Length: 105
Image 1 (tube, one colour):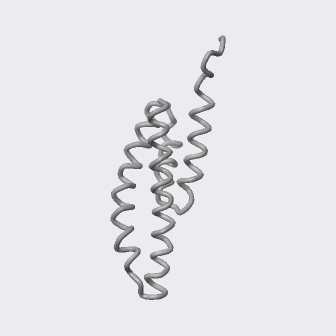
Image 2 (cartoon, one colour):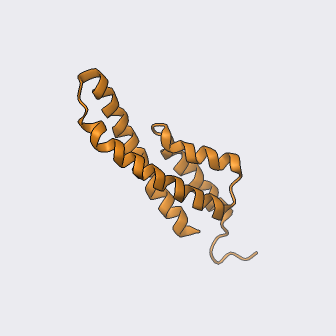
């Protein structure tokens, strides 16, 4: 499950950064009639958000997340800065459920 968590963390950060850039680009598009950022970053964010959905769903399946929590994590890639929060919450949840290496039970 460690590999699934690493993949999720990487894509969550990439999608989060692109969404923040896209948000700035959208403001510039309507405030200054500058469409370059949206034209470049929009399709990239859309494609990578689909990868985010797949990787988040894979991690949720492996970690046995409840459906409601999984849906919130999946939607986190659509709200600026929320994917960063989701990444931290998911990482803590997965790491707290994993036993420590070498611990006696």
